[in-house]
Image (cartoon, rainbow, N blue to C red; front, side, top):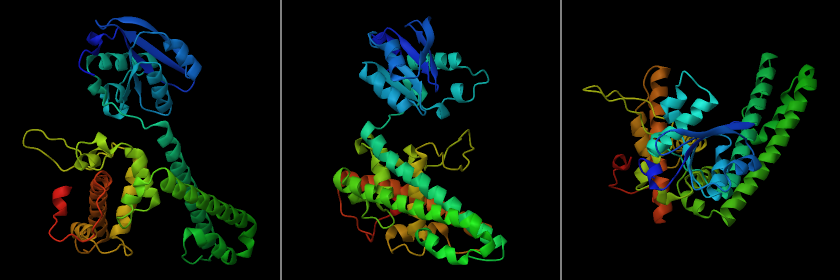
Length: 363
């Protein structure tokens, strides 16, 4: 879509502010005048009733919980849908006069002027959303198990005991004998729940393996890289979905919020933190893979050597070591985002050691 989209035969631009129960909409014409406004139930039937039979319109909505299914529904009804990134639109995110009507009005006016002002997002397809739900549910169980393990360890430690180090998978079986007798009534049910969560996580792991082997075999190509397992590779494939949406592999890190922000003015161009503007779930999995690559179990590779050089030698003071390692982890995660896209699009065999390749140039 181009500037002044309404001049291209679109009679109305509609801003639709989505809410859990009822959504507010405002429609403007090609002169920017409000021609309609009202509310509709945030259900398939409610939105169909509002929009079915209308001439083709541009409908601007904000990204959020309801936006994936709403964008598919409205697109199926023959309308052009613009999904705005509200965190990038100051008129919405930082407005001092927020209301459903004003947000809908702002969406409509920006979409009419130039949809790019809304930093539009593209939602993944329904199948990818369903598969990604498996990964997110697994992550939720892993987080819950970690919290329960920490609770048991802390309770035992506060009673003068200690549970030896072990993997999360082995914790339930290992912890029972180290729980003091006075705490058994309170902690053994928690240990049993940890064992149950571990079993459920294993079932999710089997489903992830099935999805990769039967539906998303391209994820296998990404697993050539040490530290990139089934979870990271499938998350990457499902989130990116279409690798052709990026002109070059180097565009991916910015999409995932792994590149530094910029606030250049005059002679001032300060170093800034990464933007964190992209998908949080994928960014987290890439960071975890980077931590493995740089950790004690990472295999030798040009990527690992490059990251360790960025981390630098250990220095006195805990803070110095932490900052150096943190910078290296983010740099390796950024590199992984580029590397995995390149492997996906080219189908090349990954070579951990490619003498003469300057990794810094591909960042």
